[in-house]
Image (cartoon, rainbow, N blue to C red; front, side, top):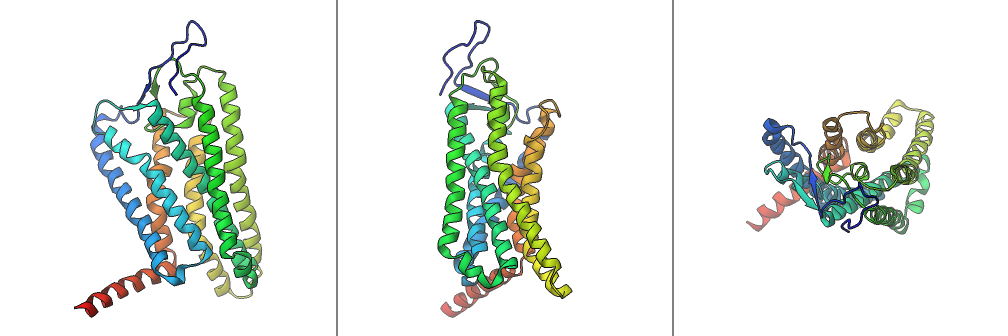
Length: 322
């Protein structure tokens, strides 16, 4: 995947190593940033592993919503692990390099997880739509087979689109500087050092964004439009509040993910400084994956109950063995 040919006499191909500029300019803040990101990373691992464990151990959570949530938790562990450990290492060393093969592998994982997350969030919105708008047919519509198909389709779309996009991107020749103005192999940053016509790259990336990122977002909006219309028709205020509460965690996660990602990707090329772009990217690569388990735990009575039951079972089992 190394670039080995020039498109013109003035274009010089880069070596087989990229330099991730990252937060190099924040010399005095790199150690504090290392500590903060390490804490967020540990929270991400522990929080998402806890969600997976709770769903596995509690039959009350064996429902479509938590099936999708387990997929999302596994996805977030993979996503943040593909970025944060390398970033932590680069904050402690002077040489912040990554091979082209390593960069390609990182971009594949990031793209797969990002695209799959968008589809899973749309599936979770559909789950809430069926639960609120068609409660009597909930178990029939969202059977185990239907949930497996929705989750499988999300992963297949994420993998196929990300691999196609990555193969196309790394089949292009890179030339000029081998410096990437980001802390990971960021697609838009890589496109800036491709020798071919940049507008072809922009159009291709924009097509992927519209078809496989914004389309799920549109489905989420349509689902919630129907959900809100149904909730407003409920006769009691208590019923309305309960219905809204079942959607609040999902809506918060959608807002965090899409809000930070759109700020990072859907902006003018010269709209902001690289440091600002990287700080915005930290929202969806480090902060959001750490907050999502907390959101689903603190704002969800079922998860709180599962935590209490798991702790009670562990204490009872320990006392019984003694």
